[in-house]
Image (cartoon, rainbow, N blue to C red; front, side, top):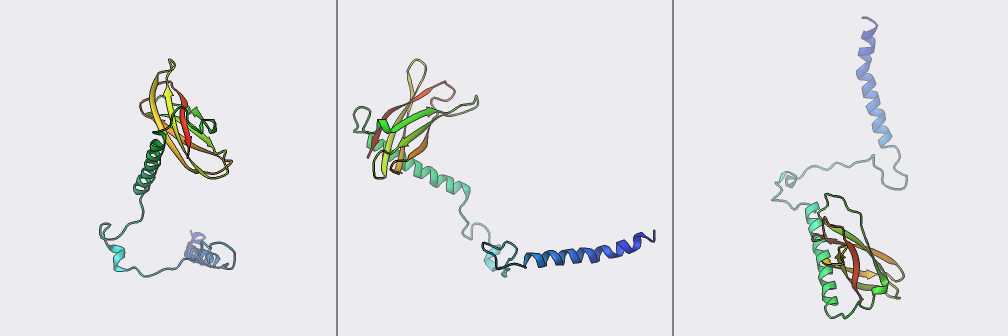
Length: 181
């Protein structure tokens, strides 16, 4: 039993020494490039720090970010739909657009297609694309409009077209119209 007593007596001393060494290591090199993750500045808490969430402004939440992305996507989709309203035939950019169906699982609630737009011009351009989801008998189950803003010249940009109407059915997406404007 006596042999264990000195080791037990040294345990707190060793723990304090390790903590001190770790703290010194964190604060040792502040001259390197980049952010020094070991140095932290503590500031006293203000009374606002204990305010309820309704009293203080909160940072952007995932829900608000998703809502803003969804709103922007809807704005681009509506602009694309407006641009396609007066288009006759397949449009002026059908050769710049291709579409492929994405693999689906039995539990999917949407059918998706990958739309690829290659801007063949020298300037960034807006593309409006109408995608039809058709079944094996060539019946159109759903039509989805997508838009691509500022597609860079000589580059390919991908966007996804999603259909809830064609969910659960083996469909084949195709480009019905594509307009560059």
